[in-house]
Image (cartoon, rainbow, N blue to C red; front, side, top):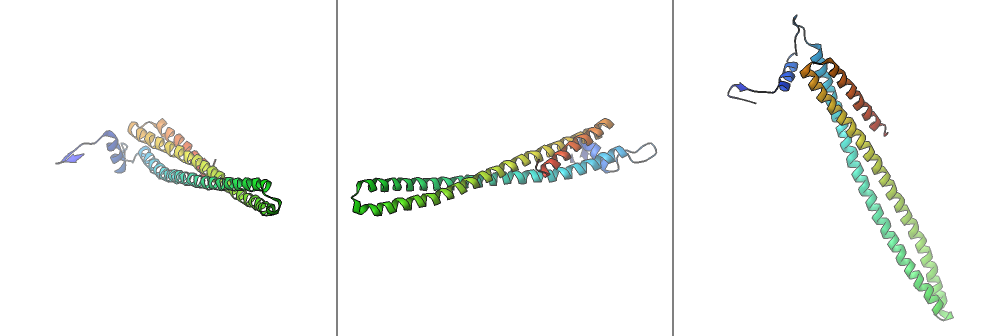
Amino acid sequence: MSGHGFHVHGPHDHELEHAAHGGHASAHGEKDGFAGSIAVATAILATIGALFSYMGGATQANAGLFKNNAAIKKTEASNQWNYYQAKSSKQNLAELALALVPEDRRAAFKDEVERYKKEKAEIKLAADKLEAEATDWDNRSDTELHQHHRWAQATTALQVAIALAAIALLTRRKWLQWGVFGVSGVGVALGALAALHI
């Protein structure tokens, strides 16, 4: 924060500014390779993390869209089954009439029974097709959601690696730098699994 010539910032801000302006210099005036490698790693991790985050958001949106499509198909299938049930009721009434009416009027009701049977078969095919489509959309949604979780895991690992990079830069611990690379490797591997739909 600055104002009226007075400037206050935290130690992390100081290290980042210092690294941006050439980093630490050795006694001979050479640039510090440790700070430079951390800065480059952080930039690369942030870029990859942004891409992974975008993919995670896209797969989450797809999962929701596909689940919505499944719900629509289930509703359409339910409507078809209701229509099927209505035809069954009409068929039952026609069969009852067939048993109760005089012989000379039975042919018309027999034709009605056959017509309802045929209509029900067509309706059943349409309802079964819609249920299969609903199941397919559900499966696609589940696949996208699984992939979203992989992207989220990869993004989280990269964010942890970036945090470790900041700590490594502040503490100048070489082993933390290896931790950054290790956690980054895990994040990239998780991103690869997401890209491969595993």
